[in-house]
Image (cartoon, rainbow over all chains, first blue to last red):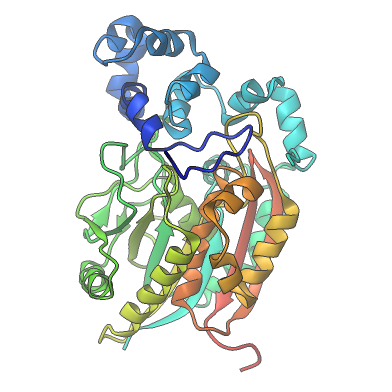
Length: 117
Length: 284
């Protein structure tokens, strides 16, 4: 039982998500120091071993499966840190989430953004 | 006694800070937004406060998901600039005002806001971008001390809009009860409509944003009565940040004067806005 709003096409990150996605989010939150970023990029699989992720979560991290990362409890602000390590922008992720190329997503934003009724 | 002299509402999109840091504000993509800031910046430069209380949210930097305070106020003497994954922004360390911060915590708790106290806090773009919007060229130091007031807007349940508005009222009472003659500016940050993830990523709702921009001055009670679901549905999962503008608004008087505002789409994935208010009735 939850009072969380159900808004189609929208992740409303809540306490249950935080519980399920704790290891993903914990890994991502370590990527805020240069030393951790370097260690992660040097051996991603070994780095993942330090976090108690499910096999699906681990695969999602290693394969940069952005949609699955959110479906498996990742918070967008944590997941963004993983994208930042790859030098990918929030607009790149926006394209992934909407099935658009990055260029088309940027163009849609410059045209005033997407109207989602 | 201390007083709230003006209030600034502004988006805190990281790319706005990056545009300033990388000297891209005159490029075609960014120029309209920064041109829109000019009038407000000129006015604020003539009205430097003694202290700023800056209402914002952290984005997985100083505050992880192990402990999620709904409201927190930071009492340290200084706040380093956070490394968010791409290195810290090249802006000065922020100095706090521990005496006023302690007073605010005591007053808020006595006023039934059981706020979390932060003694150590690295400040991220949610905090430094509004400071840069206010003061683009700080050199070695920001113009005045700044007290961070944090709101959880990223994990449901966020505080209600009504609770944010009431917190602002309590914050205003607390500021006015401080015995030293200080001019205090209050910043409410975040918004406007945007959604970063899901099929609705890229959502912009200019109709809702225009309504909010108008009523934040004239009818904040109407905005305070909107549900979390309404904010998320209309303004996007991250657009709910706009509830933090209501903390700023609550700290000000019933009648306030609009000095300047601007609205621009896009700043990366977000509708960006600024609204500046002086804490006096129009025409006085």
